[in-house]
Length: 386
Image 1 (cartoon, one colour):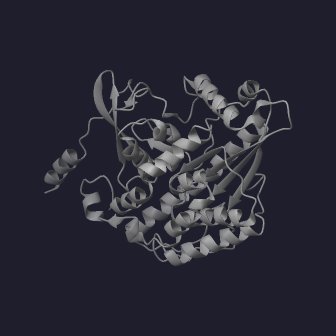
Image 2 (cartoon, one colour; image 1 turned 90 degrees about the vertical axis):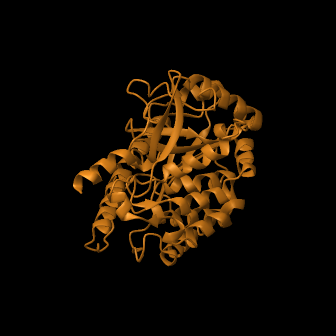
Image 3 (tube, one colour; image 1 turned 180 degrees about the vertical axis):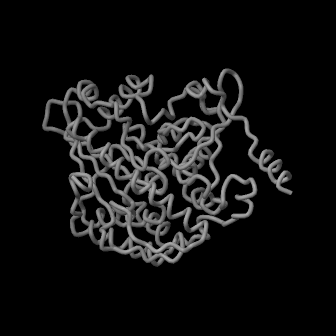
């Protein structure tokens, strides 16, 4: 019996992975020139051309960035992972809109649950109602279907994310991509983080470039990247991205971006000096990061069941990793003269959820974030502990 199970595991897990040494040259099948993604832990080889294209787009759409006048302002937003805690970030965005002080972001990044919010945040306040619906009316069964036996006996995960894929497909339509592409042409950027699990490295996807590609598979790829970014390893199945390398077809395994980065803005090696030189001016830069979670592990009694223990362990790991990412971003901002603004769930808001995605608790989180932002959010200007 055990032998049969092991044989079954081997068959289920068979795949055509990119061979070692070709991971840097792999290109997404059918997309053409590889401008839609890059490694998140190093500057891409085409960084200069990438920045030049963006500067050209920005100066056409925003004449104040051409220099010669007062200092223009550039705003960036990063949305972290956090599962159901994403309701807090959704509330902050809507409350910010209600306060009348929410800027139009030049760059929006997202990881995991933040990846699901990021396209809506990128396209602006008109999508606040959609964000509210997603994060206050979703039950666990709207996100995943549990299948622990299949997962333990050779499957790729303990649950199916088919409901989440359906939810993403409902919103991410060809017309939605057309809106993203239109903003991309203005020099704005929507970036989503996944983890290439074969390489063990973060990948940053330029979603506006995907939306602008005109490729017949762009909608499917856009959806697949969002699904991958939210694919907690073992809990949700990975997303398989078809690629070509050295003339052959392979597939990459992509999972939750939070596995390598809970939140990001750009590769840490990037400096703003070259951008400023190309612009001919030094804009005022403001960076806002919404941590969809607590700033430290939060007490919650754990049921003595395998899946509950595993889930809590993963959450605790990602929470602690997230704090380290906040420090990395703070140092990046300090080095580049960027104003750092941080939001996270207040410690006096207890986690009262009774299921993985509890709409009652998520609605409460949304309301807390909304009211804090509507009244004028008390942004923190340093990571917790400094």
